[in-house]
Amino acid sequence: MSQLRPRSSLGAMTMLAACGLLASIDTRHMKVSSAILTEMSGKLGGAVASRARGGIQYFRKKVTPSNPRSFLQTAIRNGVNSASAAWVSVLTELQQQLWWDLADVIGSGSTGKTLFAKVNQPRYYVTNTGRAYDAKTEVPFTDPLDPVVDPPATLSVVMAGVGTPTIDDSANTLTIPELAAGASSFLAGAGGDTPAVQYVFVSAGQSPSRFSRAHPYQLVSALVYTSESLGDANAQTIDLAALGLPTIAGYVMYVKRYVQAADGRISTPIEERITIVA
Image (cartoon, rainbow, N blue to C red; front, top):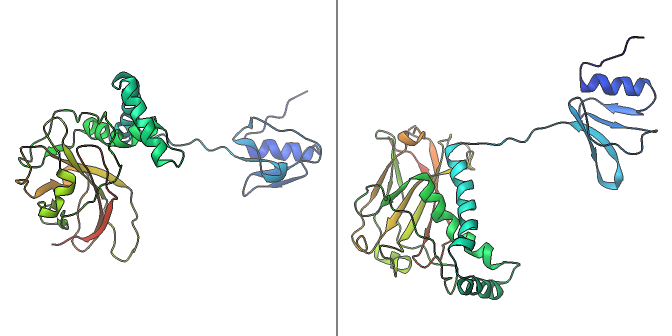
């Protein structure tokens, strides 16, 4: 006796329905209900058994989650792993306890380890991307950004005096203006081993008719302020074309920036919609 072999998950479920095992099939959403089967699990062809609210069971189309392995995605993951590893390998028990003390003050379910990771993940991320630049000389900052091992008294710092960026289509560049005097609040205490940092993210260009950001942000630069660059940092020019972000005059790009003080305090991000000039 020959065996019936369905060529697809829909074919398999159709056969089950024909045998009376399935009461109904929703082919558009790949959902089925059964008057006989009481427990369903696993997969059938390209469909997966699932359960909805109220205990209702159904088959849905099997979807394999994407696992992007782009350069920046990998750098983010490595940054998370590095911060987690540093909690054990870098901090002493006393330093760990100080982070836990800060977590008790902040509350909101925070732990010492999560606060340490929140402060230090950006620093490890920048180190992994190689997109850190000295704010004075504009040359690549090749030294790793050391982790902040002692918790700050508070996690927030004011981002002031950073100006408004401009994007030039003729040169395919983003210009971050030099700091004004009001920026001193996050520069205080910056030194060679514990620099302050301005993180700069940009989204791909889009039509000005769209009033919300259409593309994800990606890190384009981290401006590092050491004791040598304080009070003498210049405007920074970032080559967007070299980073795979072409510009079109009249289009808009979104720019997100936040700063981190030398002691680890992080500002609220500033997001700006910038029209690209010719």
